[in-house]
Length: 177
Length: 177
Image (cartoon, rainbow over all chains, first blue to last red; front, top):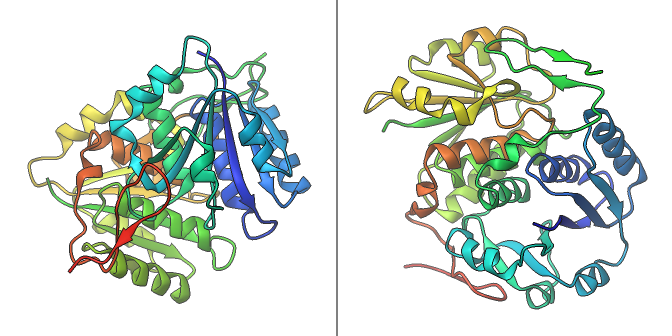
């Protein structure tokens, strides 16, 4: 298995900061290796996301690239665009798996409301996690969760300053090391 | 199978409108029957979500209740709180299923950043979809998707003004009826 990059397109400062942060954290929780933001550069959002990732451990990368077309065109392995207009993802996960050789990398693209038309043509698969309007956060979570068959929930985040100690009730955290 | 209600706690006008809308739409896409918002009443957000649900069909209900404690206390079937501090949901879905009798209803509670402590004690299960900070939208999507074992993606939304015609590339919709 290679690495997974999530590209979050069309970020707008202010209006999108929380959704974009949720996209980044969801990518991290569900097994992606990095997130690339395009759209407006939002240093405050990027820094606060990096700080949070640093605190909770692991090697998740947060980067910004102004030109999303170059990100897609330069990516030389499997490119997936998650869109409600695409084919049902659950019927095509096997195709995706067979497109990825043993060390193939995957780019997973999620957008905001307006996606430029050429994105549909620049990717290998346009896949829908349901055909109703909902959320790029929900779509990304379910896509990665099914892609990994739930195994991503067992990943370790090394070097964390803080970790959760799961409880039946209440909240408990600890500081490892 | 009874009905599924999602309770989204602690909504704040302005700051939360997009995340709260995504929670509602995600609940709808992944098989819930209704969403209850508490926190600040946000008529604009509620109306715009209702309009969207009306246009895309189905019977999803959007309601507001000021007092979330009453919503939880008055609910007399299985209550789940999704929280990163809870037990791993994937190990406890069977418990949830066996708590639900043939027509048992389920309440699924998701919060924002600050959840009052007594929520943990008012529910039957505090369950985590991963123990890293991410998103109530992603957590809700994955929880419901696994609860239904993916069958929710086959649901029909009757009476829609518009539906997607899935495509390998591009966007296509039609107006049924």
